[in-house]
Amino acid sequence: MVEVACCQFEPIVGQKELNIARSTELILEAVKKGAQLIVLPELCNSGYVFNNREEAYALSETVPEGESVKEWERLAREKQVYIVAGINEREGSNLYNSAVLIGPDGHIGTYRKVHLWDKEKLFFEPGNKGISVFNTPIGRIGILICYDVWFPEAHRLCSIQGAEIIAVPTNWVPMPEQNENDIPMAVYLCMANAHSNGVFIAAANRIGEERGQPFLGHSVIIGPNGRPVGDIAPKNKEEIIIQSCDLTKAPHARSLSQLNHVLNDRREDLYGSLII
Amino acid sequence: MVEVACCQFEPIVGQKELNIARSTELILEAVKKGAQLIVLPELCNSGYVFNNREEAYALSETVPEGESVKEWERLAREKQVYIVAGINEREGSNLYNSAVLIGPDGHIGTYRKVHLWDKEKLFFEPGNKGISVFNTPIGRIGILICYDVWFPEAHRLCSIQGAEIIAVPTNWVPMPEQNENDIPMAVYLCMANAHSNGVFIAAANRIGEERGQPFLGHSVIIGPNGRPVGDIAPKNKEEIIIQSCDLTKAPHARSLSQLNHVLNDRREDLYGSLII
Image 1 (cartoon, rainbow over the protein chains, first blue to last red):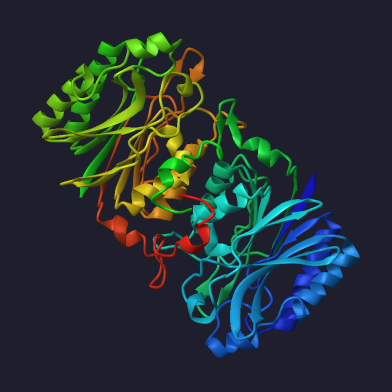
Image 2 (cartoon, chains in turn purple, cyan):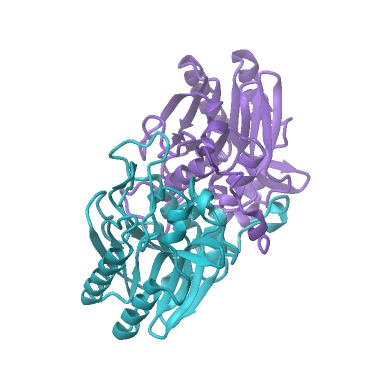
């Protein structure tokens, strides 16, 4: 059983020190609640809505040398926990919208978002490291970021590589025709893909509004049967959701009947004209 | 604008004449309500739970010569409508869990279910005609059947081939860990895939219980924004749901922002190790 926590909060664009300090407080609070795997939102160290390319660069850092990863490494080591956090990553002159996975022994791996949303395309390069699953003592962890969730191919890649849980740092925003009080489509996308792939999904969204861009909260942990485990977080309030997840249930959940398995039933012979 | 109807009813296994007669009544009722595209459930002429292979064969027919298609052709011609209906199809010594598309000029095409559920694997051969989109004067129509909906690859294939609406004859059954009053996971799968692909989905489910197998109703028409258009049908009552669908909205719905398009943003370069 793994205690999975999603920390929903409001990073402030440009206030990197403050954001890292807030992430530390939340991680420690999650640890106090028993969390072993702690997911933080997308770009939680830098904020999201950059005015221009220069600002995005100024708020970036290299991995694992940068100050954010150093601080999360310190916490993960001290508290013996795993952290997945969204970060503005710089490598040479390239920026990536990334998420780092950090464990008790330090930095384990980095995922660079492959499907960029809207103006992210102006500042970030599309992820060039593929979609990976990281095998850890607490389970097999896939990572996707925000708009990746719209691509069933991304979930499939995680599941087919053995992921038991997909950690999703995110900054979900309203979709076209979405009403004020609707459950965000992103939640339904996660439910459907968790079920279609037999995998847990833990999505940590931010809240608040930044330079006119509202965010949607609704952080959620979903079981491999496609149903939320416990309550979905509110739309506009900081909150840590935490749930006990038996990750070993994921591979079993892929067998929907004695004769059906959501991965083995794929008709690769037919999908051939396309690529997932 | 196309008036789309899903006819939710209870076929009786083995009672082919009775089922065809009931389908005729429902089609005429839908026509009276203004329907132009009418979707009927999976295997709606034969019933679903066969005791053995012989029974499945005895209830099959060839397309388009068989009595079910002949009757639906008569209705489509007379009323100038399009019908998508699930049928137990025989070709030579092979059985397929198929759906026919019939229009004012007769039989347009047949889809043979490619992802077979549970004991269907004992009686039917997996579909050998791929996943097609049929271009008609009222719109581009893809067809999937029941468990196909669990495979995002199937929806992608429809959408990439230009489908504006996917008609889904279905016999949805409870999933593992699904509670009595839960919205079926299938509805969420349709919502997610409609949104991820910018496509309408019209799913006609059956109701009732057959030889111990309960079915779930909840027939639904979903817009390309992923939200149900109008009410979802009840769990256990015959009902025709009908909605006006502007199918030309589907291709537009694929652009989620000025810089994003759910099909064009696919990272085929990355998905390469797998196949959709």
